[in-house]
Image (cartoon, rainbow, N blue to C red; front, side, top):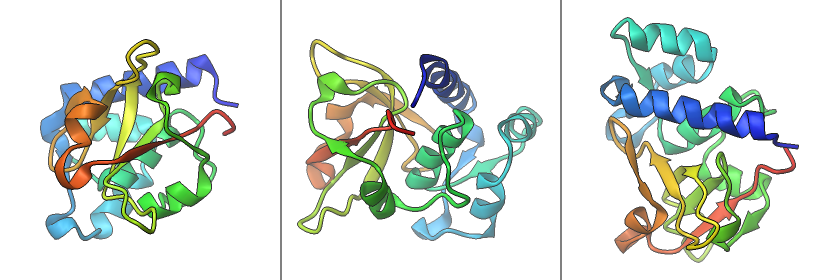
Length: 165
């Protein structure tokens, strides 16, 4: 079960990523490379050491989401998976008022329930249902509300529960 301490740790890591956004690379042409694999398999301490020394971490949005859960001690799989596999592995819900830090958000659902982008909840919004999220959908890091990301081709979204991990 995801604890409050694990969720806080994920938020602290998201804050680290926000502060070091220029050190977060995105796979060229949205195609994973060997650098993604190396980055995803780093420990949190090694990742932070590399980034603090002006190095880089590289991953796509779903690698970023699973890495955030790995940092929190919640990811039990040896590989990052992808947005579609996350949709299969984790329970879904639609009420943003229930989203807590660390939950994943998949935007841009198609008819087959595949998603185009994955976000990580940073700050819950139990009253308004529009939590603040971290996004790594390009080089860098973006921070905003789900509604800011779930527009256009990314319209339609679902939350993925980490409560049982």
